[in-house]
Amino acid sequence: MKRFCLILLALATSLAISPSARADSFTYGYDGSGFDATLTYTASQITGDPGVYQISNVAGTIFSAGTDITSPATFSVPVIADPNGTNSAAQAFNGYTIEYDNLLFPSSTSTLDFYGVFFAVDGLDFNLYTNNGVYQWLDTGTYTNTDNSSDPITDPLITSPEPGSLLLFGTGLFGLAVVLFRRKKTSIPVKNR
Image (cartoon, rainbow, N blue to C red):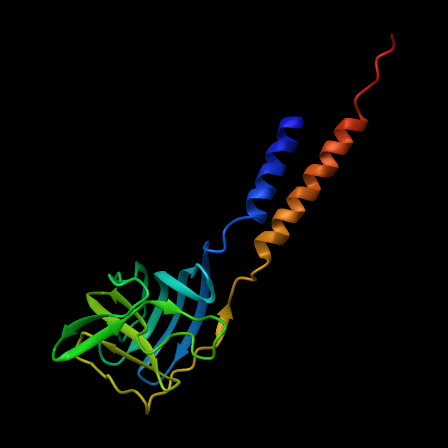
């Protein structure tokens, strides 16, 4: 029992002091006449910048994307890696240039910046970004709309991790370990000499 209490105590401590760069998941619904999707970003907070996260994976369902995706495509894919870290990278196709940095700003009105997130689904490369507060998107298929200002996409936050969730969980485990340790300590019979 003592070993169990010590394991719980160690687990609670590690969760309570875990670094802020752990991965979190953020789910958004995008709804526009050309792009309709529910996307979950797996992202890690950038050290020293509490409001900025680096996206590593995109999962969810694209219900429609112009004429390129007309039936739901459900997926989970790593983002196309940005070789420049948090500085934007670029990739050219069909006379267009996709710029991306895969950064997420969950506490901002525009959760993606002008460079946006870059990922591949069903043989298509997608870039979802904001331009002057308006969400825009393009893909490498036949429907390459790089100016969706007439197609605003809203992104209401569906779910987001609470920053203190792990700390709260760790505190609960710590309390459980203390209670079990005290209970075990008081239930040990005293030997008579």
